[in-house]
Image (tube, rainbow, N blue to C red; front, side, top):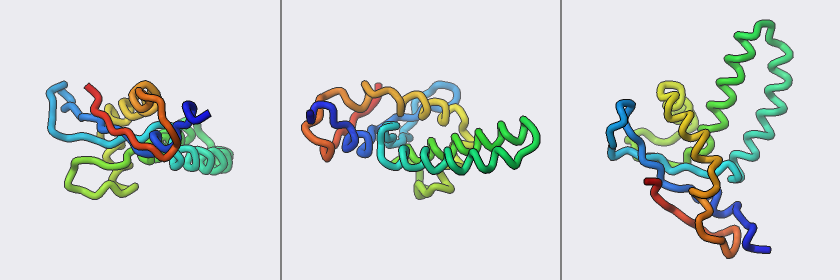
Length: 135
């Protein structure tokens, strides 16, 4: 049974090196959690209920699209556990960073859903930890 446990590793996260918009390497990085982590699942459930209520009040497709983008950014911000920047990784700072660096938001969306980056070795329980560097 324990070979299927993922929660502990999903919550722990992996180190994700950041490249500059021109593709050049940097010293900066994020520590990303997997989409199976506890905080992501909770936020996703909360947002589903909130979004249904808020979408009903909006009139235009543009307003609805903007709301969807904001919710997605908030949800993906929960996957950032830590980072190398001088600023603290508060929810506000993470959301601002993703709004200003949409290419990073897209990478987080893709990487955090790729289980092979997080679960390379079978876990023995859901309290284990695994930190790896993506190459």
